[in-house]
Image 1 (cartoon, rainbow, N blue to C red):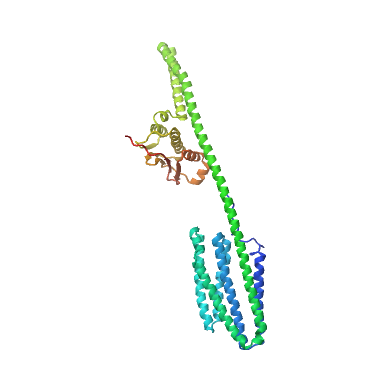
Image 2: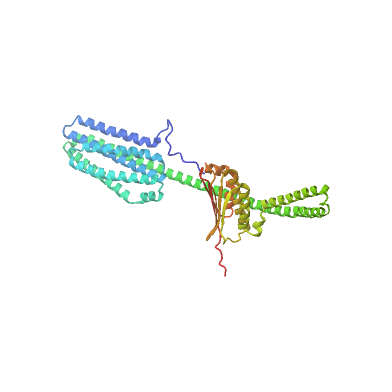
Length: 466
């Protein structure tokens, strides 16, 4: 898998928050704004009355530009976060949102005695508040990873319409302020020409710098999108490789299990034939000798002891063969084999076993029958060794779409199930065995509350008997 992106992390100590190409327009814009204030301060020395109004108009215009730039930065950061999901965009967004309200209050204070500008500022403040609320909702939707709703927000016209209204409001305010400035300038046009030219030039430069900054941000955003697509493509490729490797390993596991069962079956047949061919005649010859020497005290005890040893060898042969490949499974099917094994295992371990098998259970494919038999065998072995249980409930149920097997005990349970899955080869082996027959394997356990295994294997629907 691809490593997580680190673009959302905090910048390292000594690392610039923004690249130099983005800092330069901001620094120049700040210098230009300071120059505007300097020009206004210089003009104030030459004018009275009208000069003060012109100075206020210049300040109001600069603050409007600053407010418009702040709103643009907030919208740019919001769209950057929606498109990339990188938390690094949230910091400029929050900073812009926190700066907007003080700027609005400052503008309203400056236009307190100017009713047309104040009314327009109040209308614009309402639009900006609606825009900020809409951007905040879209960020919360993106943070909740509701990708479809995020795309819907980006593609909707509502946000663009509100942005157009805000831009129109700024344009109208700028027009009003400009008109007032022109009215005052007409009275002192000759004296104000130099100052007006300097201010217009500075404002134009500010607009150009803002446009340049916007272009740089757009270019950076495109680069971010390209990097995101590249990372997504790499992640998809790696996931595909992992999936292919998983399929190969699962196929190899299934082959090894099938081959192991076949070798066990072959060995069981050989033991049955070879040992049967040795022990059975030996038992017959011993019976013949007992018929002739059994009454002799000198040989009777030895004959009886030899007979018991041969019987033990026959019983050992039978148990080994049954463990390698249960004969009941081949001759009578899964239900009979499970009934025999559960009875023997629970009797040997002094456990109470409740076995329920559907009466309608039909003969299953050999590979499936041995897989389910080994599942039950491994489960009961684990219960006997580790669970300290008193009762085992085993259910084999034939349902419409397949076969459901449930194994539950009332033992001590598993304290850390996830760790047990990683460390226990038995659980992993059972899971792989069931997946090899296209089934599902689920285990649930809590410390002190026992363990439950649920297995489902899909089967074709049973054909109705005519």
